[in-house]
Length: 302
Image 1 (cartoon, rainbow, N blue to C red):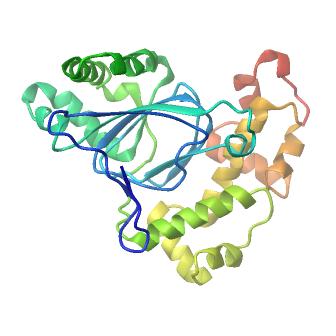
Image 2 (tube, rainbow, N blue to C red; image 1 turned 120 degrees about the horizontal axis):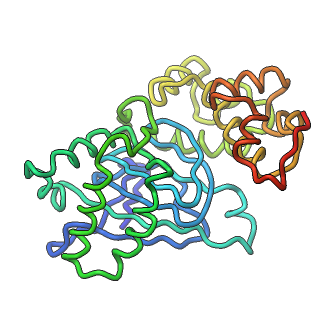
């Protein structure tokens, strides 16, 4: 159940609790995933079965795609926002996600046993948000959907087996470089949601600091302080990450020349685009395309 009392308390999911169950299974098959920043006390293990888009996890921006697996610690702020096709294209297949939630009043109590130290260590690191490395994701891709067909006891046993098998930190990539920032106030959530939605709708054009500050009803100076405290990034750094993430998608999914993609993503010159792309992705746009695009679509025009 979702508690939505926007003027009184933070956006927080209240995961259904049961005196007879220690975990909660949730299978979402929807036009698009829930697209507001939120958190919950339970740990979340999720498989993206269908859908693509951008996420914000513990203040870090990135892209998600089908087949990826995420482990989010207790009260880590997050949102998975599908690409615009899931909002506008009526023929688009529904977004689909399999998730398991477990909290301090359920499975986490059992994990206090000494035999589960490795899993506890993993969950501690999950406060940064974790993404399962591609080579290890198959265990969750097949195992997580199978939980729905098992008895309650078998579900818990299978989940513990999966967590134990993947408990080594070498199996996971931290999403954020630091532990999740705390966002306790309702107006923080409101402002960050308004800001995120505004940027997703306008990042392809020039966006002035004064303009975005007005969206969240702050002066430019107050906005810069607010944004840096809650994301550990400057506004320009965050905006460039959105643009580069979008460029990564266009490089893989289209034949557009790099120069055209640069301007389509909101950059005003190719040199800055190349510089920001290398800073954020660690490589050049053309190398990214060669590495990730299917051979039939490859193109080296710049």
